[in-house]
Length: 477
Image 1 (cartoon, one colour):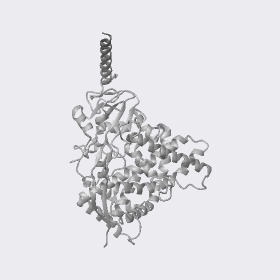
Image 2 (cartoon, rainbow, N blue to C red; image 1 turned 180 degrees about the vertical axis):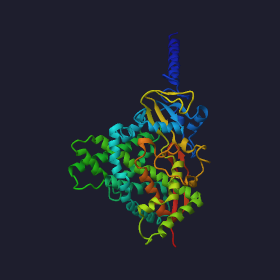
Image 3 (tube, one colour; image 1 turned 90 degrees about the vertical axis):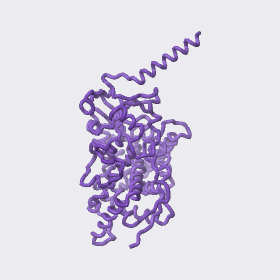
Image 4 (spheres, rainbow, N blue to C red; image 1 turned 180 degrees about the horizontal axis):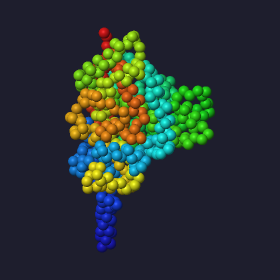
């Protein structure tokens, strides 16, 4: 009899917990949706892999069921998902007023509790200005020659190999450029295999957050620990043996740390270096690899791109001269191709914010009016915007000509590959420079054939599970 009573009480408690989990309190009407199971929420279907460039099945199914804005729960957090371009734009414009940058606890564990994405107000602006010293327009003009030289050297070496896995090869090439600028990293002479540590880190970055040995998430954290240990040791070495002149961004950071009225701390500085190294390691290499895949599959685009870059060389007094900033800015079709590649790539598939107060958004996306409770997370979903058939005709088709005559100077309601608002990606122009220079060197001097791979998987981030292996040949005129 006693056991029956315990069973009944236990069952009632479970029912009550599930009821309150699925029907959270709010001062207004919550957007429609499901909160899934307590704590787990809808995390498992959210991370389910898919092999299409299309909007993830998780988001697409809920858009069809609930509309452009719905509620869910992921890794223990109540979240409002927005696929509406106008509301997304509103969210970005209200940074620091109604919303602020936010990421789940698991992201903070990975990138550091004081990483630039988790900081706000004056400290964020301070770090942003620091990074602009590295990625601002004047710095990029000075880096153009070095990016071209490094690209040519790598392409020459790859052409001697039987095959090249493009994602891995371009990752290392880009990391050699930015690693040198950030920490004077030299992969040929360094005892630290930073690329290997970051490769381990990347594999678990967007994975189910189970932290025990053997899981991708645990390996990700171990990769972070190794990289942070290296950065801390490097910082101590720079302190004990200061350089007479700044030779990299780390020297600049150290100078800021040692200035009299600094607000920078070592913890923030090290997390900043980690995030910058990560950004240089992963994102642009994915975009370049995807661009090569698209060019192979669309000969017309390859032909027009090649003609544009060969024309740049023909207009020079001497064909052996390197790229100039004026030539870079003249690459109209190249930028169309870059825009289309990153639209389909959706390398940043999720952008998080947090509501600072109860927010009613009646009149923005719904006549009925919904409320986002203070403290709830909001997840902006760029793929739903970039693949919207109302804005982009045949959105899953690669069509760089759709960008003809359109000039982008930042984010817009319908294009947010680099975020938006005051947190628009600082490295966006640097990424475009790297892609444009690589394409210039590649299509003017080389041709290629596919060996194997090229399949994509989203989990929800973009991956090439079988790589993308090609054989590169020099062109002979």
